[in-house]
View 1 (cartoon, rainbow, N blue to C red):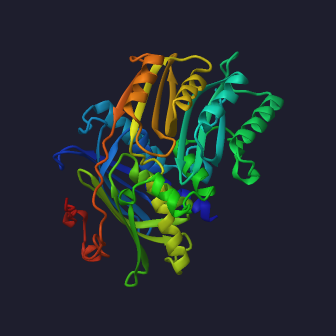
View 2: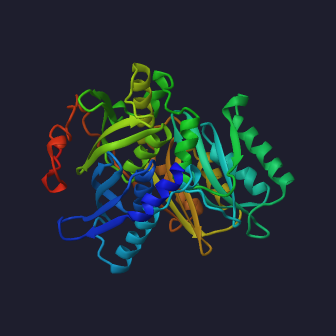
View 3: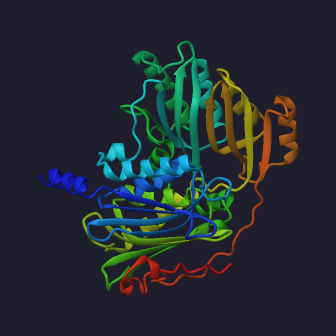
Length: 443
């Protein structure tokens, strides 16, 4: 009965999306008003991310029965969205997502597919792991059409979409799938630790890869820190995000603030983690500068209670740090563009392994017979790669095939602290959004 009543309320109050190019000089403003329900913030943010939009500022309010968010967004070129067709498509997508009431699995991007088989992998990271996985798939006539691989805190996770190289469709034979599963688990175990490797097929179809990777990493407890020596090798501590968790006794919220280096999809990563941990964002703000992003959320658990213990406070801090760090690798980025073929990924990753490169993150895609693969690499110690090695690899496979993009490390200073109520000190006295002013971060 309650579910039917909720559906009736949504039908009587359809979502409203307003896209405005006049009120902000350097960004398109998107406002979404809808009946509130759990998970709607993640769905809206995912739609914007799927459209390759970058969120530069955001205001979030979902207290009570109504959801009202405002996002300042730019396209991949850093410009406003001006094409009428694109604006109408974004509006229709947002209105469609906000009005539906999917199950949890549907709300995080599950879609049926017979075009490919989706394989999920997790295990202990080590040099050459991706090369060994790709070799197994190539030996069993699996063509990798799309994939994404993340590593964090000595853990590795991947979502790989493969097809049968003879049919170009999903692999149906259960015996063949079982053989591939056993071999991949053997590769993932590596050191013989049985409980550190997992290989599953995504039922009943495939999921949004990035959404699923967060869930895999979270389930694998990658947020638990390894020993201090390992941390030092993996990342400069000054690059780590600064997360604080405080109490707001006046309004019975928990305040979570995050200050980190800005990057695309940062808000999406944080909202994914909060959703997986069963927290609800009631109010929040996002403000980005040239290099740094500041985010502040007022949250409660889904049962309506704020965080009540020091252990829970420590856990959410660790999990949010992990969410920010998972795809924040700073280093050398290699982009491969060439004709796709079966075994291409196996060959390329083998060349990387033989030249002492360690793949920290990768995104594999194919379209119309063309492969475009992106690899973030370091040497086996986690240090920057000697560019002479890259020049040698490019000569082996062709300079026009492998392009190099180097992202210099410009580490912002570690913040010394943050102030509770940065956004909401006067929020509860504010009557409407026109009175709300975002505070510019000090550079």
